[in-house]
Length: 286
Image (cartoon, rainbow, N blue to C red):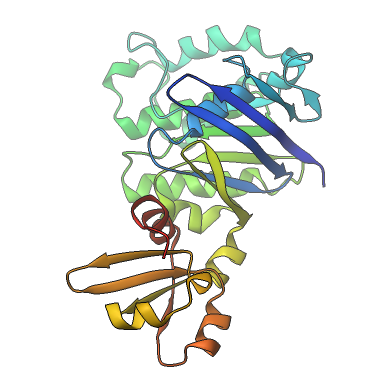
């Protein structure tokens, strides 16, 4: 299994914001979920991968190609889906094919039309008449029609109803059944990532604060609810972040089992990716 994306020491500064030494790896046959608050650096990272902005430092390899020296070769095998449909409202799906087909040597008209049929998208209907869900399905159809090996999705499921999201997530799982394929998926909908992602990378204020296999994170991290007095009795090294409220306190722990053995009087619950984001974004060190 080869790595479809390798990022080493990526840095990018805008003056008031900077990415600092981002290291990420996306193995073939897997989905990497990229999480973080708005403005944390997720989209900047994706733009650097696509060489849409100039980075200050670091190396990026996409599908075995240097993303600057071999940019054209790398992009031939990338499918991109953004949070908004980037096709003009006055176009029709058949027009989208006419525009994109010459750009990709592996464009497959039959495959594109099969996705249109599968998703119930009429070829002759104007895109401005499509619902948000239909526009997203059109973007995905276009992204998959040239047989890409890597899908890059930036908030692609945002604003979609649960039924459509579930349908699209199933497509993603089918795509990575080939171990030469992989998906980088940025999303605020952490429940989607908990369902399909193999790895999670959490970018906070321009830095990777958590990067591991999804199952390892969810199996290890825990949330502890307690009183202020009980929190005071916990050693600072045993918690990562704490949150204090008028009705009690809670803490994020990295090793749920070890914490339970050391503090048997406190209940340690399983946590979610959203819980972890809230602790890191709104919590504080003990």
